[in-house]
Image (tube, rainbow, N blue to C red; front, side, top):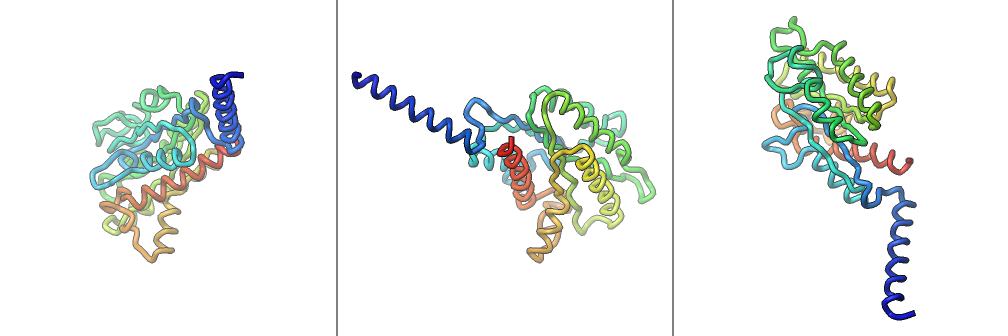
Length: 244
């Protein structure tokens, strides 16, 4: 055997061993890029004052763990889960309006859904109606889950994050109903769940902080909350990847 043949055989053995090691560790090998869509409102979208929102952080965590991935940020400020015909306070394409183009068109393996604050928001006085009633919010989440699964993907549901001290307690109480509904839907439909609300509450208790320490403006996550969220989502996804 000449030197060229020896070098070729040695290189082939190295590549084969690397492939076997990756598969035995449950990693996604090159060519199996994991496609993820982060679907939501302004808590997902890039924002001034935030160094890196959770989809960017999630991408880096997965890469560091040997999982090639492409994350599409489909967060849009002002968006709720419904259609503009349901509530047109913000003149944008809402969840139902853009779902096919922003989510399904990418043929994702995973879709991370993070809505709730805009849905629960009341623009009038305390007796006013939320932009998207709770029953409609639940039906919209169920529609997203069923459609994603029919297309071959799966879902991680995120609960809305709490509000800061500048907002009235009744707003927090109303938003809590949307959080609880999200948790119930995750359990009923057996989706992965990240209870962002619970993560924030635990962080505040453990660090003797306030909720505003995790918020830019009393509503939108700052870098600390985005870091917590990305780590929690990564944990769910990596557990599924390792077990598949």
